[in-house]
Structure formats: C-alpha cells, structure tokens
Length: 461
Image (cartoon, rainbow, N blue to C red; front, side):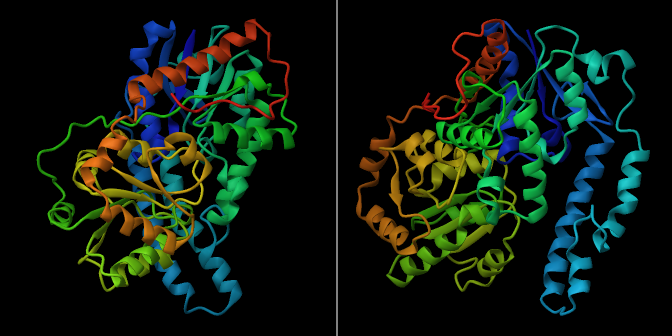
C-alpha cells in the first residue's frame, strides 16, 4: 500500500506554525512508520493541475519565493488598508480598498503582476510526464492520497474526482471546522472558501482522521447535516504529538526573548497566532487585574500576526507595560520556543475553541504548568493536569494566576510529571495507521454500515 501525503500549502508557504507544524512532523516521521505498517509513504505537492513527488519540504522552488514575497506584501497591505479605512467614509471606496485580491479592487490590481509572474516562471525543471499527471502517479489499486494540510487554501476538486474515479482512496485529516461552526472568528472569504471545501470533502472523502474525539463529533454532526455518504467506521481519531525536532539551546538566540525571560519574576507564556479564537483580549484584561492587584510577573506572547486582530495588536503595543512586563515576539525559532517552555513559570491558553491544542501538550510534555480555558477538548486531553478558568472571564483567569503563585512550584511540576503523551514519531505512526486501516476497510465492509453521527471515541493515546 502506498500513502501519498499532500503537503502543498506547507511546502509553498514555508510556515511552521499550527497545521504546518503538524504536516512537517508527519512528513518528517513518515518513513519510520513504513516497515511497521507495511506501507510506502510519499510526500507530494499539487501544482499546475498535477501532483508531483518531492524529496523534502525544504526543496527549492521559484514558486516558494513568489509565494513568500506575496505573503509579505499582503501583510503590509492589510496593515496600511486597516489604517486608511478608519479615515475613509465613502462605502464604495471602502469596498475597493478592502476587497480581496481575487475580487475587483486595489489589491487585485497590485497583485496582478505577481500572479502573472507566478504563472510564467517555471517552478522547477519539468518532471517526466508519465510520473506527474494525477491519473498516472497513482497506479495501484490500494493507493491512498492523505490530505493533512490546509486543503481549503489550494485544492482542485476535479483532480480529486479523477483520482477517486480511478479507485484512489481520499483520506482527509480534520484539524477543526471552526470557519463553519464559529464563523465570527474568521474573515468572510475564509469562511466561504472553507465551507465550500468542507462540502466537497463530505462528498469526496473515503475516510477522515480527526485530531480529537471533540473534532470527530463536530465533523460527524456536520457531515450528517450535509448528508455525506461517509460511513461511521471511516471517521477515526489519532492524537497529535508534542516534541520538537530541534534540540534545546543552552542560550536563547533571540535577544529580546532572552532578555524578557532572564528575570527573577514569574514569566507567563502564551503561544499561538494572534487571532480572535485565541482570545488574547481576555489574557490582557486578566493581566491588568493581576498587575493592579500587586502581581509582579511578566507576560510573554509568542505568535505571528494573524487576522481580525488589529485592535488586539494595537492594544499590546500601546499598553503601558509593553517592553516592560508585556512582550510580544512574532518570529521565534523552534529552538528558542523549546527553551521558552523550560524557562517560563506557566503557560496561559485562553482559547475559546480548539480542535486539539498543540501548545497545551507541548507545554505539559516539557513539564510546564498550564492555566487553560475550560473547553471540551482541553478536558479531553489534559483533565487532571491543567488549572482551568472560565472561558472569556478575565476575573476567573486572574484568580487562577494569584492561586498559582501561592502554590509550591515543585509540587505543581511533580503533579504534571505523570502526563504521558505520544511524541511525534509515535503520533505519526498512529495517524498513518488509521489512514491505512481506512484504506484496508474497503476490502472488509464489516461494522461500517452505521451513520457517521453519535460516534464515541477517545482521543487519548
């Protein structure tokens, strides 16, 4: 059996946060699972209407350079437009300025040369035709295309339909479906794109692997609404891992981060993209209560600039404690982040909704205490090891901070020492095992004729 691992978005974006971190670890550890699972794992990317093999996510590509340059332009364009929109009154002018680059507007005109350039410049030397077309790369009856990446960002339904018609099994990894269940946390175009993608997945998928039982229930209920033909036994759960690929550094390279952590006071760490679902507003409110109440600790935010977050980032940069007891670093290496988990006093996770919670298991796996919002998936993963506070309640979080500082740190760390979660090698084996089992289930139909609702499965390792 061959499992082709689609890592298109991670390959071209070059990112290493959230979903991209998951994809990089799956690809990095896939080879070690081949003998145990009796499969062959092959990373592939979709480009110019076809799938092609890659040797590594670090392979060079002109397409990558153009994509990164376009990302930078998009970031700065968004910042400039956000500032201009506060001073503009005309609705027609606002519409032209705020339109996505795929719509009619200023962004579309500015990005048009780069879109044309990306089509004209060859991405890499052309590979033999008989090994790159979607219908010929997959030429065995038990081939599986596994899609763990941000598929809604760039996918071709017609290519997937051709593969499915040839008997290739399509197995998708579900991280979460929040653009559908919590659209208020996302930009309108993102919601539209994700909703269309999920509707296609409901029709095309031969199986799903979910990162938690919570995600499994959510997607099962949604697929029931969409009248998906996917059967119960082919919606499975496999947890993510927690370890870092890079070794721990003796000295943090990032000067600002090193200085922020090199104090006697307690340091509270927040890790994650600055975006509404992470609820940094509640964290800032709680820290204000904490500092006003005599708290001396520092808050260190590690996360890239996301979406719908200008109010929060402006508040961070204008805060009277910014660069004193409040710090924000948007670019931190894996090595430095690993050291953060060792040097911080505790991690705060205020998410309103999560499909899994990778920073939570990364912190607990490194022995770092966690104060987290009391949401279902965190209870599923870490009940008994985490101090919970009421979501979106700054007073509740501040109370937990004061309570934490009254406890013996040695005893707190001893309590979480028993937390046992699979590292990325074990997690990858588990994920690919579920993918392989879904593929093999098509030769045995037993126990698969139940609807995809009311599934109960544990996401624990």
